[in-house]
Amino acid sequence: MRINKWLSAMGICSRREADRYISEGKLLVNGEKASLGMEILGKEEILLDGKLISGKGHKKEKPKPVLLKYYKPRGIICTTGEKDRGKNVIEAIGYKERIYPIGRLDKDSEGLLLLTNQGDLVNQINKASGYKEKEYIVSVDKPVTKEFLQEMSSGVYLPELERTTRRAVLWQDPKLPKEIQRRQFHIVLTEGLNRQIRRMCEALGYEVTRLKRIRVMNIELGKMKPGEYFEIKREELELF
Image 1: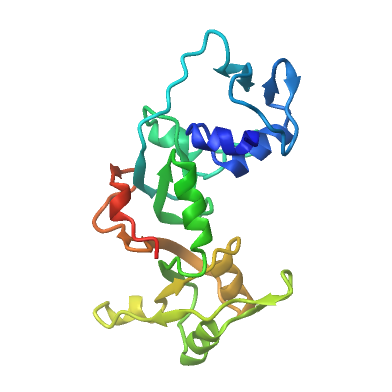
Image 2 (image 1 turned 90 degrees about the vertical axis):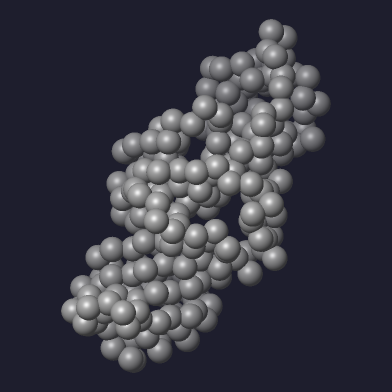
């Protein structure tokens, strides 16, 4: 089995994180630095960042499956690399089991984030990327126009990526006070480009002042407060 897949199956990290650990030289197999795509049996002595995770003297137990929904506050980062500055999501939660985020929210954004130790679940969700709805509440620096909403929903060309975003669903909440309603909208995306909403708004001359994710597929943030998390059952997550 490839080492990144093994690490994911054991609930140690996602495949992407495993590849990053390998690239950074943090993963040793029988005393040698692991390489990308390396095949292992799972019986080798494996150290991750100096900690024994497999081999003689290590009690190998597959962890209890965990799936959390978490309200990520602004200022918390979703990556754990050495170059990242600031408190990361794993440190912020302090959960008893090793977990990792499914997808990301940038440092300046807040709201719903799913975390797990189930590598196969992450793969299922990634495969469902074309159907994986994510809903956000977005506040911007000036009044929203009908033309802006139309352009956002039709897809915005991002020159730095040389592509146009997928169509999106947008609306404004008529229940809000007029002053808030004028500068705020909901958007539902089915793709996850890096800082996508911020880039779309910038391309149309707007700046995002607050971005809050309130739903991932059928899981909603609800009345959770920043920093709170709850365990949910895998069966609650409707993938397709």
